[in-house]
Image 1 (spheres, helix red, strand yellow):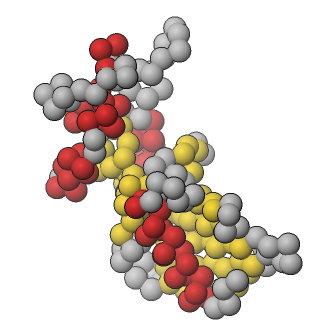
Image 2 (tube, rainbow, N blue to C red):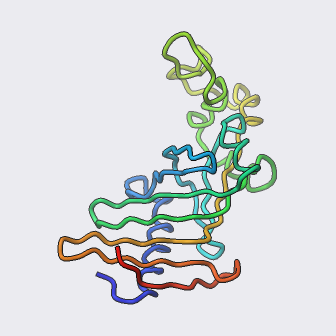
Length: 195
């Protein structure tokens, strides 16, 4: 068990650094909750450990892409069952559809992953079970030319973290620490709290 607030904050940072790099990390797929109280599992693509910013990919047509500009509050839930550590985070989200960072993220994605942005927008109604993909791309990897229309639907969800709640679950007694950004600065103020 960690015994200082600095150790707990470092544990949060290290887990978030590892999560996007390691698909087997239990924190690779956190639960993201937007201001409309809708929750979904998403893949964490990057973590900026200096700015404490998460980066995820989204479809610009997804409902969350309309919710976040109107209400940027976002909650994120990470859980590592093996380590018995839960991290609840709060932050401010933004949808970014253009620019160098978006272009780089698009280029770094595989064509198989990019094909998701060719289909119907998330939440589109259907009379039958569907992936939403055009029939010619079901189970098929499109080439670069076929993916050109998909790029306009691709965007980033960036979440700048403002609060962290670190919880270690133990049969001997749970331990919990909370952290908040100090005036939006790079420093964090922590405290121990009862689980």
